[in-house]
Picture 1: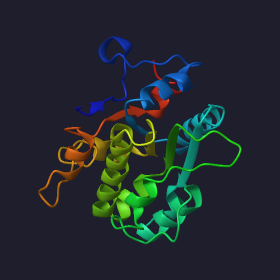
Picture 2 (picture 1 turned 135 degrees about the vertical axis):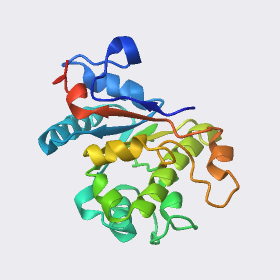
Picture 3 (picture 1 turned 90 degrees about the vertical axis):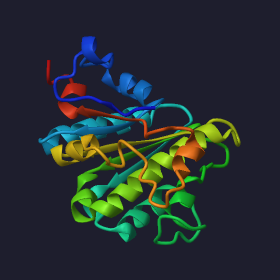
Length: 222
């Protein structure tokens, strides 16, 4: 599935992915059924308003687990894992991407609370995702691939019913540029070991990622 990119001047006619000012949250949720999102803005206030509003809306949705990552505190793998283990129930999380206790293993976990329905979807909202991109670009790429790869694996594995996991990466235009760059983890599997692992596991030729500006989603740009 090729990555679908949306720029600043998003139009319904050209993209088929348009928003009305009062209805964007449901439409974003509909888009999240099939894609991860990269939402960018030069204005931190627009980014914050978008993410807070989306989080509030998602919290009202049935069988939905919302995980919020605060990117300004994520400068390395330890910072990321420290936040993941506070959001997803996992035992003794290691500071690694792979392995039986690493990030991939944690993302594969499905949380459940006694007396409540098991979530059918998990949405990760990563504020200021470009902070890790700036600090550790190679690590950021591996994390993006892990998040998107595990999400595809969970969705298509057929084990325990369909479980949708999506990430909304929120950041500046630097994040947008990285998402659009040829060879980025947003546009293709890194395949460092030459096995095509995530492509084989998910059945996807490339990560399903869409890019759009916060202002467009908020209805601030015509």
